[in-house]
Length: 90
Image (tube, rainbow, N blue to C red; front, side, top):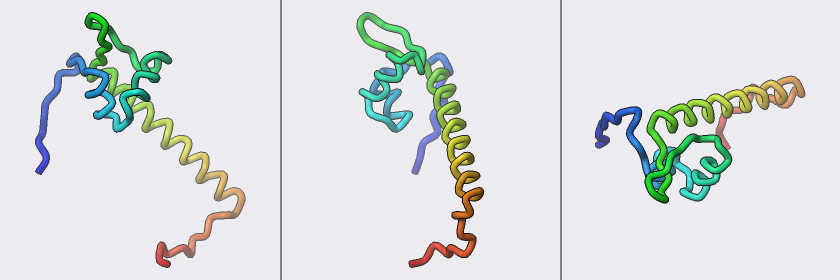
């Protein structure tokens, strides 16, 4: 079973919770924060990330991935490397 949880967009996540949400390591998330790819604020010495900013980053990341895969698929198709007879077996 999975629970449905409602989270306000301005809810502040710890770096570990944000990393868990995005499915990345905490260190990778901190690197993203330090590079300015995801906004954050500090509470004392601790970084916090809003749910809204996580959603925006996630959407951009997914959109960028789709665009990259579309380019790759087009390049493979143009090169004539796509084998439409592939059945997935074997």
